[in-house]
Image (cartoon, rainbow, N blue to C red; front, side, top):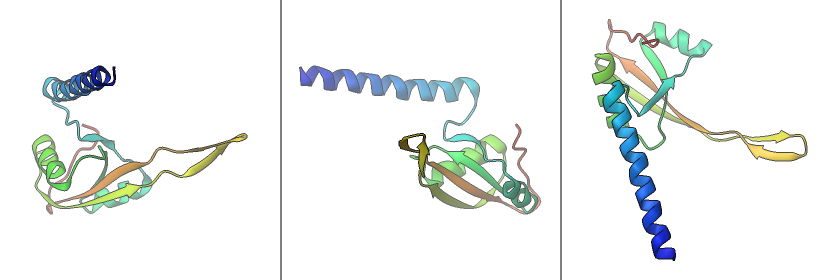
Length: 118
């Protein structure tokens, strides 16, 4: 029975992967970039050509660079990847954790900018 369970789990994982790639192909939206990370600090950094995005934790810097270059049509100079760990929180009597996230600070060439509300 365990063998059949493993086969079913693999099929489910394959279906999820196909769904992700088909979504990216149909909508032209990169799957690696979840959303722009808009805060007060992010808007100050945007004036100097640095933009913050929340990304998929499995993405690496070269994949992110290619995705941003293709999607936003800008030249990327530098990428800083930041992992925000989950924090312990309390809800009444119960303890839990917030969800962690991975974000990147993308520096584009001077004179270029990204329209983050695209």
